[in-house]
Length: 332
Image (cartoon, rainbow, N blue to C red):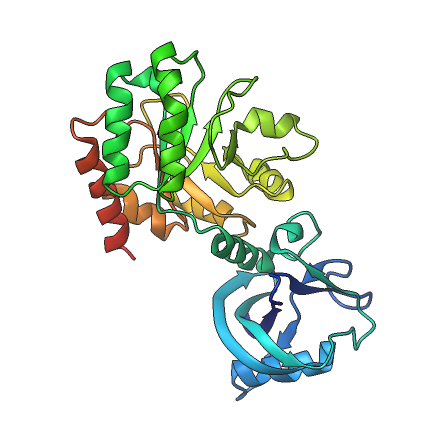
């Protein structure tokens, strides 16, 4: 199969907006949005090709180019070898030299547009930069741990380096714990921990970065919530829907078989990687994650891992937290 090298530019302004262009009639995939760029000629350096293509397509002269992402995308007739570069400095005002529409958008707006699939991993990378995703997430469920142990175990995990928590309360929280949680969560947020609440309605007024939705709630939603949110996904369609509604992140599960949901078919690393590759939002692996499986999750494209039972229910939550973080960092 032929391999076609392509140089693509992500022009980014100081306000975070990036430039996208609409493919015109007469070209393959008309009506789809993409980052501007074009084919690298034989013997041409990718950076030189990008400068030439951006001058021809949008009338600018680039002054600062930095590598952003390298990705191969297979089509039935060929494979496109994409070299993405971020461009922060240029001269000239961009316009559609070939009559194509151009638009300045925030990265999270792109997922709601008809965008060519090879461009979507760039969107995920840009979103990940805006709100960096910690490598380890904990789903903290008070119903799974003795009430008197819940906050001490969670505090130990935070002290050991945990920086992202989804508080899942499907059952009423014991009164004593409910009284303590607001102050605990406020202190966690102040120390830089990301906290998302997964509760039945009505939601308690507890300190948090936002909400965490189930896949069923995502499917029923017509528009995103007012707060930032993440979502649990179990299908490719739900990943795409989460991106369209501008979710900050998605848990994708189960990567491996898990005792928590024994009837759920494990995705496995190959299918997980296929679904993550075109995703337009950061994807966190969930399901059957042990420290010895962290490397496999990362190699499959996960931008983090989530754990339900492996930390709070461990004999030593701090030691368990460090084991996961060490496994992630060893594969970095």
